Image (cartoon, rainbow, N blue to C red; front, side, top):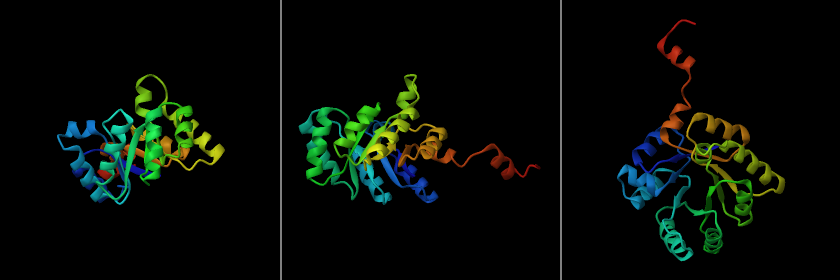
Amino acid sequence: MRFFLDSAVADDARRIKDLGFLDGAWVSQVAAEAAGVDYRKAIRELASLTDGPVLVETGSDDPKGMYKEGRELAKLGKDIIIRLPLKPEGMRVARLFAQDQIATCASGVFSAAQALIAAKANVSYVAPSVGLLDEVGTIGMDLVEQVIRVYDNYGFQTQIVVSEARNPIHVLDAALMGADVAAMPAEVLEQLFRHPLSEEMRAGRPS
């Protein structure tokens, strides 16, 4: 399993890279605005820090805007993946990018049927949003399990990115199920190191 850092902050990327776990990045415009950094500058910095893919989103809703902006974003690094919404307009743009040899990710996936459509559209990645599903009272990881089963049934090569991973349990469940990638903030990745017994050993407490 690969770990993609969900952040627009270069210092987060440097910290995770120093630990040896920066397999790629997931960058959103909202995260860039919250961090007070320019979105495209953040993409360039993260692309320079990781040897893996950087998954970025467009701000446009219409196909022409998505296509134009996506082509511009793809020039910001050596392995930029354009995230497109899982709707007819987004999948039409994905086909155009395939002709341009620009890889895409179907994002905002909330059902196994949507993930099936994404794989049929030959996108490189599909991103079930587990944290958002948990927020509305469903179990996001159940969707990941369903998607893996569907993809295994038909041998789809689309890789599964567990996005909105908000705690270590999301990451562990994704690994147990066999998801390809977990996208998470730096604090969640760092939490994977922690365990109460590890803290006791570190403090030198007797067993």
